[in-house]
Amino acid sequence: MDGSVFPIARSTLPEAAAERLRALIIEGDLPPGAKLNERELSERLGVSRTPLREAFRMLAADGLLVQLPNRGAQVVALSREDARGAFEVMGALEGLAGELAVARVTDADIADFRALQGEMEAAHAGRDLPAYYRINRLIHDRLNAIAGNAVLEQTCRTLNARLHALRFRSNLNPAKWDQAVFEHRSMIEALAARDGAALRDLLVRHLRAKQQAVLDSMDNKDDKNLQGGKAP
Amino acid sequence: MDGSVFPIARSTLPEAAAERLRALIIEGDLPPGAKLNERELSERLGVSRTPLREAFRMLAADGLLVQLPNRGAQVVALSREDARGAFEVMGALEGLAGELAVARVTDADIADFRALQGEMEAAHAGRDLPAYYRINRLIHDRLNAIAGNAVLEQTCRTLNARLHALRFRSNLNPAKWDQAVFEHRSMIEALAARDGAALRDLLVRHLRAKQQAVLDSMDNKDDKNLQGGKAP
DNA sequence: CTCTGGCATATTGTATACAAAATGCAACAG
DNA sequence: CTGTTGCATTTTGTATACAATATGCCAGAG
Image (cartoon, rainbow over all chains, first blue to last red; front, side, top):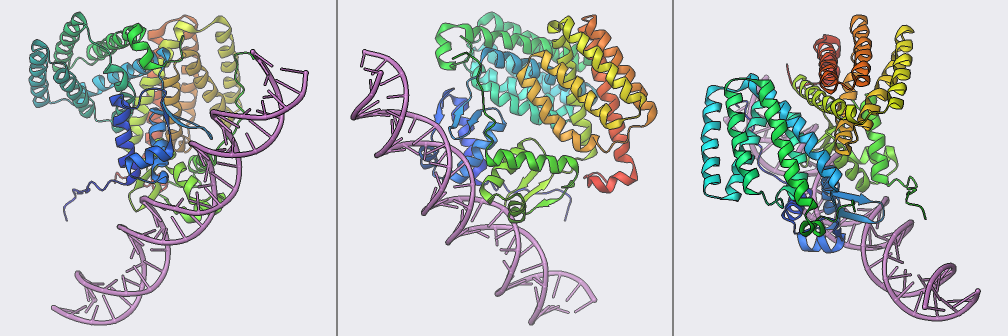
């Protein structure tokens, strides 16, 4: 036997249910504040209440649901403050990822990043927002992977899930989009120069800009009813 | 009715079980790598398997347990790399807390911190390690609270639970203890001076020192068997 | 008309029963 | 003696039944 394991994707029912619910929440199919009826959901998902409840616990731990004793689970309604806080934390984490990545990045990695940056700029030029988001995510995930810190990676993934429901609704305005693409280019240069402090700084600023975009869109009246946030 | 809610501490069985298990794990009563038999544990805790399994999901989300499909749950055995990673993330988070706290800290808060610092130094002088740890935790929690970021606070709390099982075993050597107390004094001065960058830097270094202490103790042969880590 | 109390219903919480999978052991073949 | 196969047992996974709690409605008092 060689050392490599071969974990067959043997997903349990609670995990599968959680994944499905996560998608429904992020997609906006289950809107913020929605109350989740156990019986109804278990029938819709084709599982019994027991594994569904375990799925609830998982999603609650991820911060996607809140569970009130004897009153069931509901989709979390992020307040403006929550969103602000989550982006602040995300900034610190991605900043750390940058610092760590600098110490481990290879020339091959940098070549890959430049290629991804090219794709991103093509998506930007073609005004292909979904492709932009996809590549953007790829780049950030890749950076996290290179950082070589499993705890960091998992924490980021969890936080990202929480933010996705928000970020997808922020209709990136052209000026901010241009700026974001430019920032990405600078980030890759800092990485190539192995300048950890600069990269960290860029990442923190980058996240701060995303935060501002999302907060602005939350202030927008049209979006407000979708969020159901606590703030008046 | 006034706006303040009065949530009667009405804990559900899964929550109570999770809390109890968390204590058992952190206390070392359930050592790293220990396999958790559902039937046996449910009898010991006096609950049925259903709420116990929900407790497992919660603790797994906190990173205190790992659940293998059809093979049950076991207490996580943090590898050296995991511990390193968790401290790195903790450093970034506490650094952020420091930066944020600077913007919101009041003079009254600073007076409180100085008082706590006094207690800490007394504990240090009296070689009262438990008291030191208690006050240390109080100070860090307080800083997080002042930072005013709920997501940050929750993330820190989760990570801390994971690290506690390790930190309690690191037998702080005198030189490092002296150093830690000194660092705390500097931190409070930076806070009083509202110097966010300095405070962040101090916190990151402080965490790095703690990390080193724990990693050293993990390298110590005596502790190794207690950890059951993956690394050889 | 509004508020309170109590009942009927719906929903969540917990225990238990049954199904599926893993584990350990023993018998057997090589 | 070693390794493998199949069975018995144990353990986990899921469904369901029952208990406890919350919710909503209606009647009646003020």
